Length: 384
Image 1 (cartoon, helix red, strand yellow):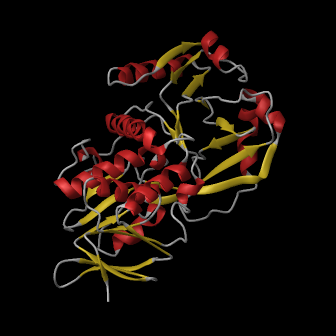
Image 2: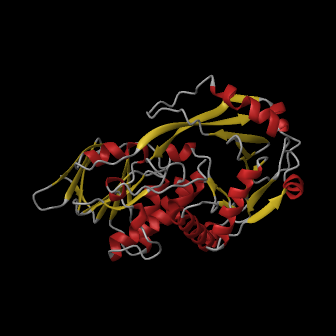
Image 3: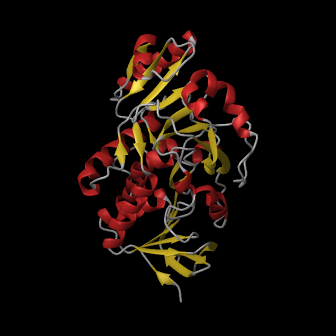
């Protein structure tokens, strides 16, 4: 016999757990979360870089980040120590005067919408990040930007949701999703069946397959991303901002006594391949040596490096909202590398949509899946 709930959430990554947490906070506690892995947050969430920033060039991305920051700040006392959200900042730097002009325009756009961001000249950039080399004409710094602990945030959501009665079912891979004769949605999994009038698709890189079970064409593709760990870097300060070379796309941040290095390969094909590409380090060698020589000198520790999957949409913006023509089916997908930073906002927005019939915290209209059919894609220029 199927287990019945008011809401079933497919996926116990940070997005699904955030939805469950916010539903419980709004009083909807008869919630079941099904997850194909054996632990929450052990899929793409566990492979994330964990950055959070409001330095975006689209209104909706910016608003999502500001809402997430506000939620995390409001939960800080509950979360306690160690903090999950650390405001180390994001620094974008460049040696290209034309690119700096675009960054200055972006900073003006951001400040007009309540984002704390400073435009820096070359001298201030070098003073802030003395470990950076090469030509610099300036940059932008967001002091409220920083890092989220993906596992810590997911665990907090799970703990608090579970306390109020939300049930988590692990090792439960979805095998079928259908509407029954009464109009409810039935979710069949490898660990049993579940039934609810409302189902939320928070299946990360597997979201397209789940949506297709109800005949929904969801333009979400998995794309591999590499994160490379350096050797020990004693010359770097113990706390540094996420430091992005806007000219090459290579970025670094602190990870203990080492540096974590990231770069989004524009030629990476879509697919579920998570094997580490042995040729990938060669792609970042030159920009790493010229821009971050202390990190390059520390060497690369490939044994501690890893890959994960972005869930990417054609315009690199999330899909949030109800699925057209599928009553009770909600989408929280396609975050395109922004899932950790936007999880608090997405969870609240979807919970409000389910409980109140509309998102009260943020306008989700720009993120509706229907934008793709209408060819109303959103264009973000600050994609990492």
